[in-house]
Image (cartoon, rainbow, N blue to C red; front, side):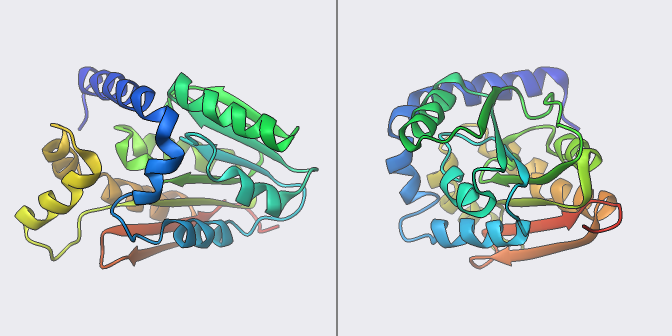
Length: 229
């Protein structure tokens, strides 16, 4: 269980890291988690899992610089609405630049801790890519989002994990290139992907879990617990 002090320390650390990364994040993210990783195709796969329609409202949790926005806009169109939520002001500033450069008038940006964010009621879809496992209260985020989903609305998480059958030393070697921080051991011990999987299975209808890239990533999804749209 994550204590309040641990969660606060993690938030402060993440804000400091991503304030430094924000300016070059769009470029460096292409190498994430390692050079050659099919990040864009995985994002597209996650988007397909959302099942978006024109006019839908979607929340992008830990949206960063808005790398998902273009894909989401293509799916929901100008009548839809994107709510981008991120902890770090510098990342949201880059996201705002992206929104203005593309002339999108249907994007709202919110600076908030994902665990404290108040999801709008009846939202059609919630997405998080390569971010939720870093949130200490990731299970709480899943629960709050599930409660806000419209009937048949979709919650989709694309993120990294430790392969189940990989030796510990090799896991550390591979993930260290991604995390690069002293909190790596704590992340491995916390195993946040298992929390996310359990919450999606418990709170959503027709939950699914797919291991990707030899078990180094996963795609988890489920629908709102009411009558499908």
